[in-house]
Length: 111
Image (cartoon, rainbow, N blue to C red):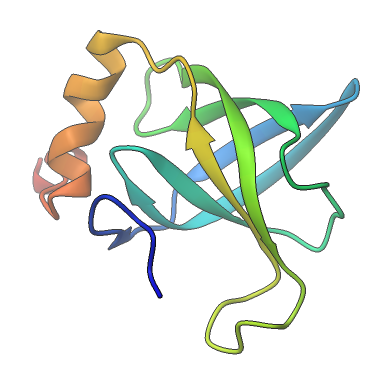
């Protein structure tokens, strides 16, 4: 059963995430207004809080905290290894940038 409250859009976005003072670079598989899926082989425990930076263009990255909601270590065969993250404190101005991307329209690619 899918517990998501909104549809995810497949979108590769460069990200950086930090847990326990270790910084990791990576990419997303998909995104929705409430969170992202991070492709990684790094082991991150469920319910961990991490700091995220998402690069959506040439400007400064969007920053927020997130909570790891689930981890895929191969049990979902159509997803790569990684984890799902729920945004915890995404600023409203960042949400305005993210919402069109989540709806499938990317203003950065349209330029």
